Amino acid sequence: MEFSLSKPLSSAIEMVKPLEPLSPTAGSSGANGEFQNILGGMIGQVNSTKGTADRQLASFLNGEQIDIHQVATSIQKAEMTFELAIEVRNKMMQAYQEVMRMQI
Image 1 (cartoon, rainbow, N blue to C red):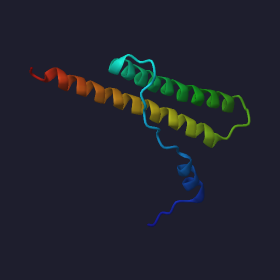
Image 2 (cartoon, helix red, strand yellow; image 1 turned 45 degrees about the horizontal axis):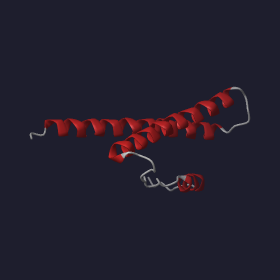
Image 3 (cartoon, helix red, strand yellow; image 1 turned 180 degrees about the vertical axis):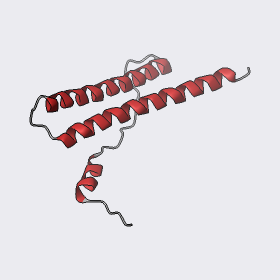
Image 4 (cartoon, rainbow, N blue to C red; image 1 turned 30 degrees about the horizontal axis):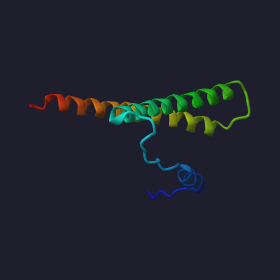
């Protein structure tokens, strides 16, 4: 069985933007402030993608002219963003537990 990418799928893949590197923000107080800003930004992004998905779903359910594929894509993006945040949290907890196990 042989599979090939169809044009719509390949164009959708090309639309995915690469992640931008994190840069230190001005006005933060050392590493603690930078970490807090990064974490706050990540939580804000999770909330933003979920809000966008919720609005698009509500619009679709209210009968507005919105493409079902766009709704499904935004819902999937919100789910993946949330899952990524959970995995980052899990890795941070593992790192914290590892540091706490270290003997001085």
